[in-house]
Image (tube, rainbow, N blue to C red; front, side, top):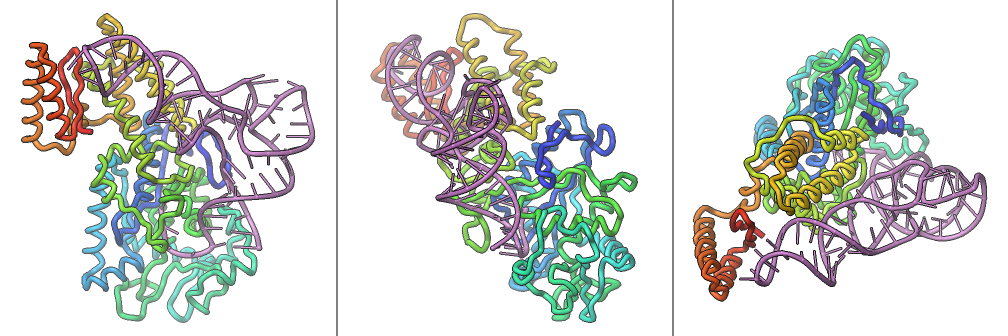
Length: 466
RNA sequence: GGUGCCAUCGCCAAGUGGUAAGGCCGCAGCCUGCAAAGCUGCUAUCCCCAGUUCGAAUCUGGGUGGCACCUCCA
């Protein structure tokens, strides 16, 4: 297994901290709004990583947090005249439902910030005791970046005057403009939590460091966990700050490997709240099957920036359909469960820093080759069994082709319409049998008017929604 | 201003020193009553310039053009 470490900026052989095990933590969503395509991309990328690692025999413990305390959540709760939990519950539920539609497996652990305040208090105290954090008279607690000689080693930044001036000031009492809040005092009487440092809210960066130590971390290795991941925008300042906290509070480094996925852009522009061009996942799911979106979003290498557009999405959809058509051809056959040359090649491709393009080209080559053989006379018993094993492996490792292939092509057609179409197909087949092609063509026109296409095969006439 | 990434066929996209994968679209065939699906064949020398090398899309330098982070953000 090779993984590109985005901190070292090179592809490295993956060697876990403990033989056969992988501990992975990914920064999850802040649940104050519906998930957008970027959340989907990130969740899909790490879903794929977990599947590949497991296929390679690693015992993976996968954690992805839910940030359920944050200024934006508070703001929304106040606007809606409700408490934060009704906001966070609602969007957490929506997030889960949408990820399910994309075929994203649930993580093993899903820690929430509000449930881990004690762990955060403990880490703050350790940082204060060791001189890496200080409290102000306002009741805030800041991480003292000047106390960490390795600060900025993750993002390889330099702190010049320009940057210092550009940083948004939240307090005049900070020793250094780069210092970031571990605990923010809140005095306006809105939503606060009690802590040994006064009433307030935790800083955003703190939760990940604290929850990793609480739920996931090794205590005796030079790194807390094997892999830490998230969107590329999190490298700085979020991950830089997490790394600093963990390093200073525990004496060991946070993660051995860092993985950052690229952005999703819309029409060449970064999707963001401030640009007003967010694309909600729920809207995309109204138009497209979750598996099509999965296939599309996963179809480009995870580190590349991804430019979302419907033309490319349609092309991806067609490519996925090729897989489903082969499944239709072999429907109902049992696989032999042995690894095949194909499954080995597929796993090898994905083991190279998740080379999805290589993987997809292998799948297409396999599909074409099987179709070609099936087009010739013969039963091809062994090939069929082996192909079923290949398809099962594709489902397992990529999550592609998981639906019933006949139903897949008929999604969105109601039972009544299906019945009508089937009746017309029967009538047309009778006309064909009687060589009344004029009538059969007329019937086909009528069938096509339902927005479907039909295909005559040796096994019978099938139809698909266009 | 600081830091970093990228530039491969009409479109999407691998390859990162040994002579350009794959998909979509298009064209020509096979198959089919006709279609659809499937199959076969055809379509690039890798932004520009200079250099290193027996050999570069792949390395170095310069240029041009995109983009991102530095502020909440997957």
